Structure formats: C-alpha cells, structure tokens
View (cartoon, rainbow, N blue to C red):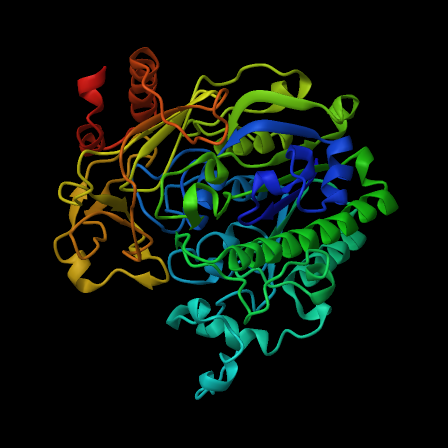
Length: 504
C-alpha cells in the first residue's frame, strides 16, 4: 500500500469548483475530482487545528474531554500504527503548531519529518530589536496586533515565489516521490498551512482577483464580527481566493508527478482539510467564537484509490466525518483497527454510496455540542457558558503554545480511566476561563458568541439563515447526541451541562 495524504488548513469547501464554487479558479482540484470520489457531506469533529488533528490520528472525537492539546500517551495514532506494523510514514509540513507546546507529540509519530519555516506567526527569525514601526507601516490598522508581529517579520524574508512555504512543501513532496515511488508500504503526508490566514500569496495569483480596494495590506481578518467596508471585505476575499489558487496550482504539480511516475496504478491520494473558514458569511470572520456553521463544519474530502478507479468522478452523499479516515487508512495498510476507534471505514462508501453512520457530532471544548444527520444540523449550547463544573482530562499538561502553570496544576486530581485511556487514569484539571468565568477557546483567547441553541434544515435552508422549530427532529437528534456521548464516554458533567438527560 502507498498513500499520499494532502492536508490543507482552513480550506473552505465552497471555494472549490468541484463543490459548486465559482469565484476561485481551481482547475487542478477539478482535475483531481475527475479521478477521485468526492464526498459531499463530510464533517469535522473537534476544533480547531490541533484538536482536529488529534481526531485524525486517533479516529475518535476528543472535544468532550479536552481543549487544544497534544496526543496523549494512551492515544492511538494511525501513522504510528503503520510504522509499528512495518510501514513507513513521512510528513512534510509548515504547520508550526506541531513544534510548539500543545502540539509537539504529533510529528514524531512518523518515521521522519521535514518542516518548512516561516508560515504566519512561526517563531522563525531571530531579531532582538525589530523596527516594528517601519515593518508595520504598510499594513491595515486592523491587522497590526501583538500576535501578528512575527508574521510581519517573516514576510521580510519571503519575497520571491520560491520563498513561500507552499512551493517548498510540494517541491519536497516531489523529491520524496522521486526517491520512493518504487518502494512499497509507505505514507506521505503533505501538510500545508495555507490557505490559513494570513492570506498572503505571490502577486501573480493576487492579480487574478482584482477589486477596488486601494488601502494598506489587508489579508488577515481578525476573528470577529464583520464591520469592514464593502471594499475591505472584497479585498480579504480576493486575498483568500489568491492563496487558494496557489494551493490549487501546486497541488496540480503533485498530480503531474503522479502522471510522470504512473502512481495512479498503485498509490492512493486523499485531499482534505481540518476545518473551513468564515469569509463574512453570517456576518463573521474566521472561527473559534461563533456557532459552528456549515462553512466551518462541512469540509472537502476527495479520495482516489486504485481499487476504486472505476468510480472516479462520482459524488458520495453519505454522511461521513474526519474520524472515518483513521480506520479507512489502517484497513488499507492491513493494520488492525483499535477498539477505541469510533470512526467508520470509508472503503464500502468508495465502492457504493451507502450509509455508514446516522449522525456526527462536532464542536469546541466548552461550547455547543453540534450534531448533524446530513440534513438537519442541531447546535445545542449549555444554558450557561460558565466554566464551573467543567474539567479537562489529560496526562499531557500543555495548552495552546505553553505548559500548564503550577497554579493550574496545584488543584489537579486523579480521575478514573475512560474507555479510551487503556486503563490509565488522567489528571482532572480546571479549564481556561475568560474574564467573566466562562469557558473559552484556545487558552482563553476567544470567548464564545451567539451562544444559543438552534436547529437548521440545510435542505431547505443551505445557508443556515433561519433556525426552525421542529420538536420531533430536535428530540430525535437529542437522543442521537446522548448515544454519541455514551459512545465517546463523555464525562458526567457534559451530560449535565448540555441538559441531555432531560431530553432523552
């Protein structure tokens, strides 16, 4: 078995022409869709970046127990399982969170890894006293924040197209394939932080999307409500289109390499992302704060496998989820699927469009538990967002970019094992809170907004513009949510927090 797994970050499904997008030019995603099987109802699990990757590695949901964090000692990891069963895994990435506290246990699950430096706020260049007044003078005032400092510094070293990480990553992928295409039993993960913000792309891509904006550089919208002018909104969207076009072109070079080396005969290729991104839809930018609308939750997935090449160009409407990738890949490599896995193999769906799951749950730790059956989406928030009575369970006490403080650990207790911790107890610790004492995302950086329960019918209302009232559907989805919480051995406080026992 040979597999190339391409993971982009923040790739909005509707930006791709195979999913009905019309604004961004994506000829190579189109080209791949002609060979691949495209999944139309594929959903996230845990959010955002590192929680999503933990789901991918383990094949189970983790947002019910943990905020942003690393792989745990008891976690399964599909590349590690492939490695321990005689296969070889290699990752090429510019996703710098892998090398920070809170994410540093992922890349070492592979046999080898390569990192491309300089994406976004990567701690890359050592400049003790940067002249930020000069460096930042060409940027929009909304884009000048303490946490964007590194990005502005990094860009002074990224001038030519070959300096950008996307070309470097796909160039290194070509090198790997040139060396290893004749070998067998390997996984290559190509992971590009693009089109994650900032939406900074070479000029030739940006020229494809002209608009009337004439101000300072504005390619990084802050996670917040939209209050920009129509020209500013158009500029941000044009920059997102440009960086997505760059992703498309360099993905096309990978397809060229498949053609050149005739890899279509014996190599599988998966294309997906970790989550979407709001580009002004629902009057929001970004992620983390707002309800998990489908622009965030419903993500692209395209799969090519030589055994199913007769089905190339087909669309699958069956409900699938990120956790389904783990058992699928392990099955392809002939590796046993761990009992802790809750995802379902997609192999039978590749053969024929058929149901493998009734529902999927997804969300952020401490916020709503969201559920979909492929038509209805139900966003169930706790009545109060207070962090009182909420806990995280971990043996890896790191958060978003840092270790737990002594103060955070001083009151930790030992919790009995969960059904996925292989008999190992965990630390039970208080979660991060915002200034109001409410649960919050990513180490307290973001507070949840618009936090009220709602139900959407995405068949009649695909843009999720108008919540509906349907007691029968709500009761059915609450029952399914209860089943999913039991399946994932959710802590008792989660049932109470969501009021689920009152609805079943």
